[in-house]
Length: 153
Image 1 (cartoon, rainbow, N blue to C red):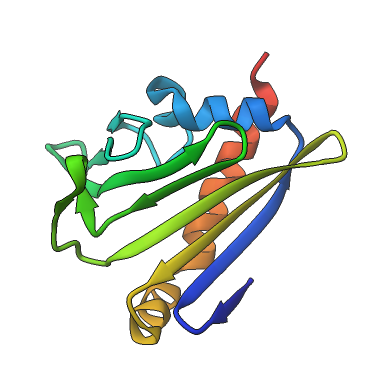
Image 2: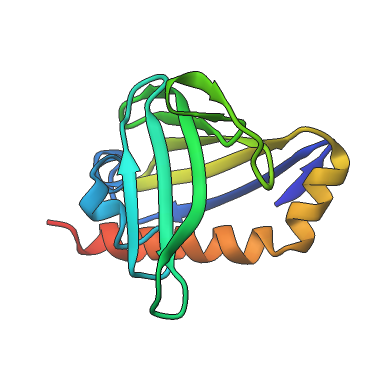
């Protein structure tokens, strides 16, 4: 875990194959079970320029936006790239925090080395994201992903 210029990185071993980790990311029903605390609604259109949108219910009330972004690139079971600076169809937006995230799924022994490299516009935004709880939040999400995929058949 380190800040390098305007980047934050986090990595964990997951005791499941890259195929299972990819399935958890690429299936909206699976994704909704581990991404953030439930209940959430999400839209995943896993293709370049496809939508990546999540909403969470605030205090049992209405759903509110959590993340709106656009997938940029993917290699099944290897890499997934999205940005919050663009919405579906590469439409420019002004997010509350602009970032580009690269998730990698590397075979390690009998499992997967899951890594996230999160690039920000500048060092100030990177520090802001870290101070907001990047390591705790993204770490918890990875732990939830690990627990979910380790139960997948």
